[in-house]
Image (cartoon, one colour):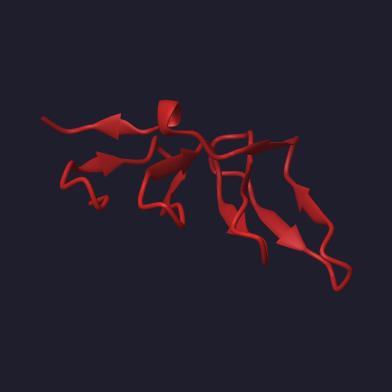
Length: 75
């Protein structure tokens, strides 16, 4: 549940995180938050994401920024 009180769910194989401003965002695959709060996810359903010691993010398939549009809102 996001700070606005609305319930969101990630897509099958995806992940839901809440931004620093309280917005629920989802990825099609697993996600990671960097030191600045940016959330990057695998664009592949069920895909993995890793971050190396230099902060470079690598994803299964490709990477994309988490989005509220990827979430499913419950009424």
